[in-house]
Length: 319
Ligand code: AMP
Ligand code: MG
Image (cartoon, rainbow, N blue to C red; front, side, top):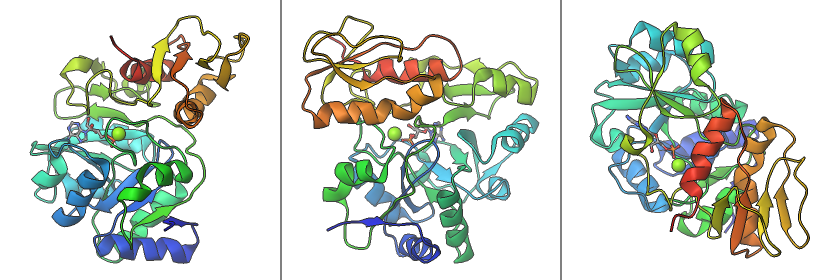
């Protein structure tokens, strides 16, 4: 059975109805594809955990249509969080705030906070708007991959990853390739200053410029993120960072690095944006080709490059 659907006005309306009927709808965002469900319905949310194979104490991000959703889903919103929402929504930024009674334990993993984001993708936004028009409040959507695997950046990747776990009535909306290709920046807004929980395309500098506050960065090992170091964002192939690739290995590296003889070039990005956009697709390709080893030369620099290195270090094989 194929779950893929194009994004006509009609099919987006059908997808909103499917959500209301407790089905799952995978949909494109500018970061990666999300696996969506009605954020107020515990049965629908239980299916997300089942399909992803994810432990149920991991919180989900609620996708809302605009800043209006902030007041519904959260409370005691600090001034600097309003500033971040105003400057970067719609966009690749998730705000963690004190939850309202709308955000129940099955969304927050039992925590007193809720993660909220307005995605910058026309299909995602119209899906959320259609869903709200028929009484929905928000769409919970983690990345549409099995727990620990690489996030999908195309509808085909979602289908390959999840089709065997989906049911009749579930849908995958095809909105093309995700433009950013890395998951959203997550900022904890429950303290006196923004605390960055996950790096992404919205950089610490952008956060500081927006809020006038120094953004703290939480110790990555203290974050409640999914999986252990060697099993998150991971393809089946081993990922080795910054070593010399040998014949038969896959290689992901900036375009000025030549491909040694016998090495399979998976990506040769000419910019940091292209590096982010192609990374997950390149890791998937390694598995499709049945490679045992992928060598990745990490990009230098801060901002988006630091976010890429963060994901690579989690996906790399650790002895
Ligand atoms: P994903 O949606 O797959 O990109 O991953 C969602 C991630 O968002 C989780 O692994 C958490 O790290 C983070 N997250 C979502 N909600 C919260 C929250 N209330 N507090 C802290 N982190 C959160
Ligand atoms: Mg994920």
